[in-house]
Image: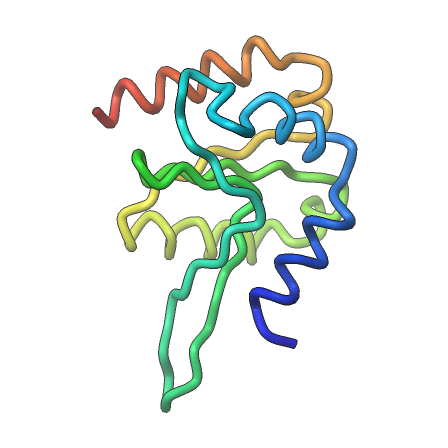
Length: 121
């Protein structure tokens, strides 16, 4: 499956927290910033084979990736840490929030995103 096809599949099968976040940031509703969801990022090209990460949400203007972690992330902490450090090496800023934080503490999530954007500006 091509990465773009996998990203489309993820968009069709988003979690409740991803849907909630998307409704908050889509169409420049979040401080007029453009966010994309399930954004494909090429991270390697090995022997002409491209490798990709798919970010839950991405703001190109700030090279900001927002990841929303569900229960599966409890079992893949090492992979998440490696992926995040690779993305940071590539110049991205990565923020991680749990499903519960997004749904129940959106104001705090919003403040963290804004502080990060302002810090990086």
